[in-house]
Amino acid sequence: MGKPAPVILVLLFVILRIHCFGQELSGRSSAVIYQKELQAYQDSQVLYNGKIWHRKYYNVRGHEFLFTSLWVIGDITINNQVFNDKYLRYDIMDDELHIRRPDGVVLKLNKEMVSEFSLNFENVEYRFRNFGENRDNQLKGFARLLYDGETSLWLKSFKEIIPLGYNKVTDLYEMTEYLYVVKEDRSDHLRGRKGLLDFLNDRRSEVRKFIVRNRIIILPRQPESVIPVLMYYDSLSE
Image 1 (spheres, one colour):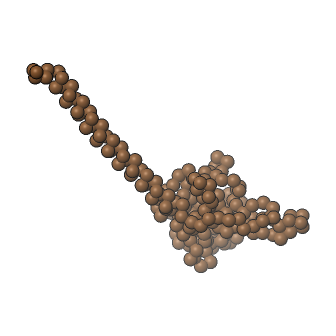
Image 2 (cartoon, rainbow, N blue to C red; image 1 turned 135 degrees about the horizontal axis):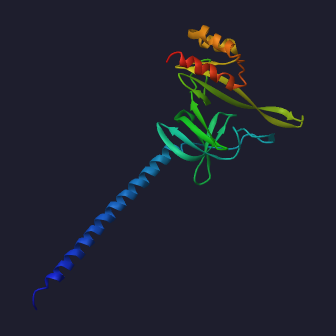
Image 3 (cartoon, helix red, strand yellow; image 1 turned 120 degrees about the horizontal axis):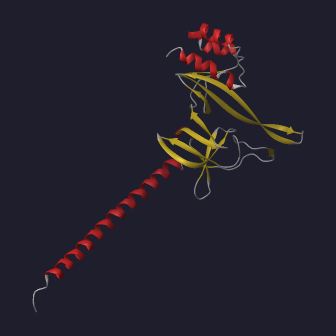
């Protein structure tokens, strides 16, 4: 039998290369898939880290959550790692963040691990920060950001159960909100104009004149009355 024609040799070489290249690609694809699965597993260990939630309160009108008892989409920062588009809800009765696992189980996340989170409710993004628990007479736990500059303004929301608070028949959830102004490591529960001026004491005279000139009435229940004052104070240091 004669030697194989040159064309046949070329075809054999090409087929062999395709086979080897296919094996190489298959190996690479498997490695990529494995790395993705490993990363997803590691992420889940960080993200879904907490205790299973069980309802504690019954026969109370309303709910213990901020905004709604339904799940909303949000982002979480845990140990400097950001997880986007998760099902969350914020329990302001116990100051805890809940997450829904893919299997439907509800977890109370380990609070000390969550540094920040956001909730998207009715097309508005609300940002929250964990101020921690070891703060004497200062802002603690989760609070919602209202203004962010050299100074910042935060809203702390609580709920408590009022016995027979609804028509003297049913217990009722009642929400209370407190306003805090923060600068560097200091925070203060804002109760009115005097407290704000005391907190901004290094520019007290200028801030007071600004408030009087613009006829601003500081009302803790109306945070929009405080924000222009903080913006002005921050501008003085620019």
